[in-house]
Image (cartoon, rainbow, N blue to C red; front, side, top):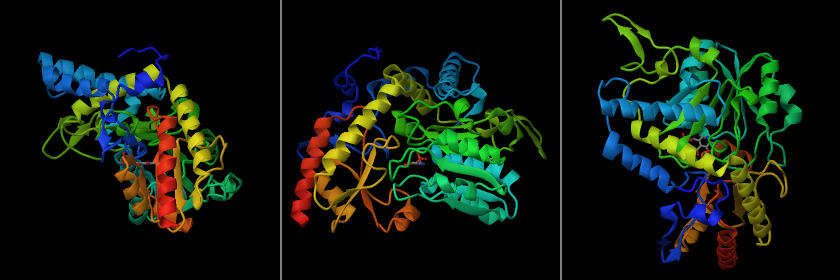
Length: 413
Ligand SMILES: Cc1ncc(COP(=O)(O)O)c(C=O)c1O
């Protein structure tokens, strides 16, 4: 791979073997990146290399292959720390993804710290994975859930933040970029307001981590969750960032090998974080390939990726506005709080029908509630269709999408 940040988007696109294929006799257009991204050759090669040369268990073997596997595995922790500007790799816990990271916080920090009547503040635009774990915790502890509302622009209603962020709020957990609306939330501002009332903060960075620069020290958050598979890494690997002071106070959640210092029949003692939270044999191969994905994204540059995402989203929004009976969700055209996620509804056409017809033409969209059922209900929708872009997508693909959608609209009219 040429690591120059000046490679053209066309050259970069050629790093993704999967994109070079036809689906139902048409060139594949992959616009389902918010669900999962595609993987560049460098990541696929890292997986193959690991299994062909280095496969061994980590942290325990006293032989060459185990030493190599351990070094590569731990090198990813260092890369993730650098990627989000954590102070140390000890603040990075590997998880299966964002969902597991949120559950970890709920079951450890949450179970330890929340009591009857404490408030967990979420927003109306959360993905189920930053909602259901808190519902389970609230049922167990007697804590109550509150939801910061959205406004007509499909942004968080910041005018009402003070009304919701009261001293009873012990945790404010919010999504950075909404996977349903595409809204980019002002994370630093939200964290600052939460800290002012003494609340702990968790940022769901599932949709932002692969798409824009992230700096946990500048954000000031206590926790941040991300999924590798949405940022060019394999499925089954992600991370939880936790501020060291808070991780040190947290009890373990899964018990087993790797997370202990000493074990007696009756009782055990725990390792320091992050290992305290990583019981059993981890997902070694995918973690190593996650490191390759981070190197790959950094070789392109996240500012450049973000600018490209936004340009594509703006272009798509402008073009979609020309289709009758189609309404784009999320902040208005031209708003700086729009990401590369563009959801829309077409009058009288169910999103599932629309997505099925698009698929027949080689276009991969997403249709449904996008794991945000309460938000859809609030918006009076049963479903929406979603095009979500990444750096390997092109304006020509958007032109083709618009052609396909216009044809579908005419068909149903
Ligand atoms: C905003 C948001 N949060 C959380 C998740 C859950 O991520 P994962 O399924 O990788 O755990 C997603 C996945 O779509 C998401 O879009």
